[in-house]
Image 1 (cartoon, rainbow, N blue to C red):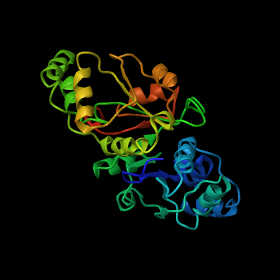
Image 2 (cartoon, rainbow, N blue to C red):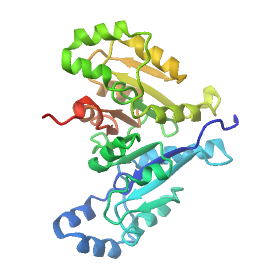
Image 3 (tube, rainbow, N blue to C red):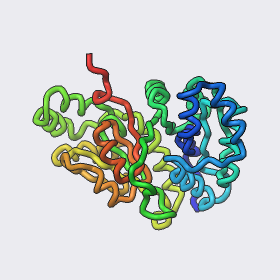
Image 4 (cartoon, one colour):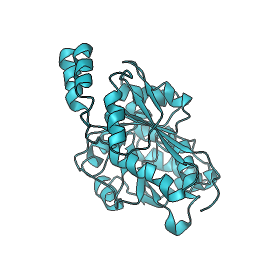
Amino acid sequence: MKEAKGPKLVIAISSTALFDMRESHDIYEAEGVTAYAAYQREHEDDILAPGEAFPLVTKLLRINEKLGGEPRVEVILLSRNSADTGLRVFNSIAHHGLNITRAAFSGGQSPYRYVSAFACHLFLSTHADDVRSALESGMAAATLLPSQSGSSGASDEELRFAFDGDAVLFSDASERIFKERGLDAFTENEKASAHTPMDPGPFKNFLQTLHSLQAEFPADECPIRTALVTARAAPAHERVVRTLREWDIRIDESLFLGGLSKGDFLKSFGADVFFDDQQVHCTSASEHVATGHVPHGVANEKKK
């Protein structure tokens, strides 16, 4: 393998994204924190079933086995549990053989503030408020939606990430023009700005680190594949291509759909997870693949 050139890829995951904790959460909602804590202690030796992010985490950690040497991927557990009630989570991690050793148990408070302290590149959670706070702090973050598709992914070996463009990989400046002035104004702006790279969005640094990790593998042996799945179409595609070229980032596959529904294309790509800023696209995509909503940009601004 090639010598490591980039930083280690660090992913923060909430306990409710990693495991199915709906039963205990229902007790918390109905009976309060004391009943919840008692329930977790009583069941701390009962192994939690996999949650939405479990297949993704399994594939991420498997990359270390392929590279050998120092681990190049690390998964951090962030939980609203206390260490006491979180014991069941760590028991489940051990049972499933996941190499997760670092964690922050925030005792009922939002754990998002530890994303930066752990130098994480991505935060995945089922708590929308935590995700929004992380994004406002400059971190890539997404709220994992309940999947309607079951297991996704093209194979048990390859890890496939799919990204929307505007307000995810790129800033929302162009999307804002579309929202405020319509398609014709958007198209004219993109044609006029074709040679002007777009500003980065919240997921640019995550994609950059992912690209660096891909470069550590021979091209025909890389277990990671990326795709851009965007509603853009020609001629608005040129600015995307030139922006990625300016960033020196390779996207393996690029789908310019011109407004077509993304779900079938994501299924064909075999995405393990897809990130989009618009709730309507996320809901549609979740029928086919695991999906993370990125509550960023003009589409997520509260209407006055």
